[in-house]
Length: 97
Image (cartoon, rainbow, N blue to C red; front, side):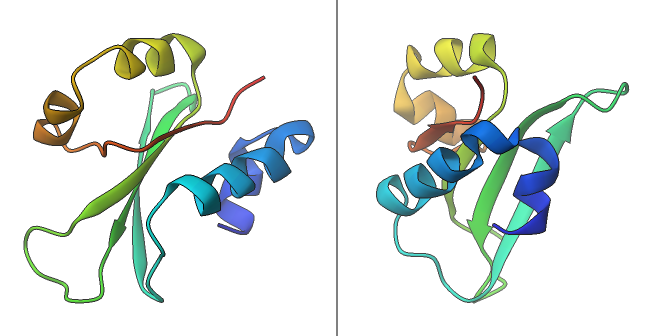
């Protein structure tokens, strides 16, 4: 939540994004993993944050931070069960202006 998020989110919305993660997501464990999805040009689409405490094969995803408005709008209007099937979480946090 520290430097990694600050590298992608503009300073003007960094605080709001961090607050939304803490308010919307389930309480985080001490051990989390982040899967970042980006394009070849380096544009980051989203971060998928999951609990790695048990290090089981199927780690639970508990929040998806979305950096592109079009992607966020599409996912917000999709069925939450469908988002889970493709590896995202029910909880979406926007991180764009």
